Amino acid sequence: MNISKTQKQETIDRILNHALNAFVQEDYEKVKLSDISKSCHIAEGTLYNYFKDKPTLFISTFIKYRSNNNQLYNIYTPKDFDSLINEFIEILSFYLKISNPKLEHSFKRFLHLLREQKLMSNTCMEQALLVADQYVYNAILELLKRCNLNQTDYMLIFKVIVTQVEGIFDEYLYEDIDFDTFLQISREHISLILKPYVDI
Image (cartoon, rainbow, N blue to C red):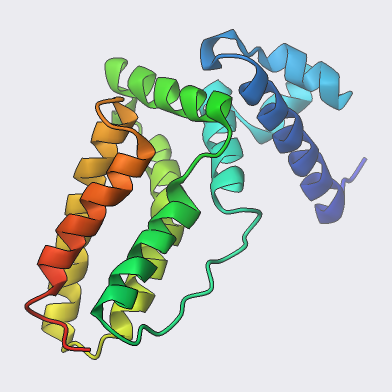
């Protein structure tokens, strides 16, 4: 029996919705794919046709959550330096804040497990995590384009900002700081990086 693209997408969406529900109710390790397949009213083998294992399903679920179902942050052209920095922080908050505490805990635990088990050497998982972050990278690039920087400065600043923000975000993921502190430290670092280059 042939399954249409629409039917496949409906099945994927149903699995992801039920998976999100499972991951916000239970710790990552306690979630069972067999329970998710039952809640979707599909065979467990069918679930594996779409997601090869629990890490793949989790990161796919998280990407859907992170992207707000593909809603994009509406970037405004800044009028002055303070509004530029505020716009950077709004972007980080929009794409990186995990408003559900249980999902936040599951995501942190998932990353810890990946690193402990050295699953990060798995190219597919690295690609999936890059997809999860691509929305924020694209928004940062778009905002920098509106600062009238030359091409060399623009790409250099982008790389420096991303490196700094990722380092601070790691502190948040390892629970050394909370999310609000992550935003505050990011604000300070981004301000220092941009001040010599931006005149608005």
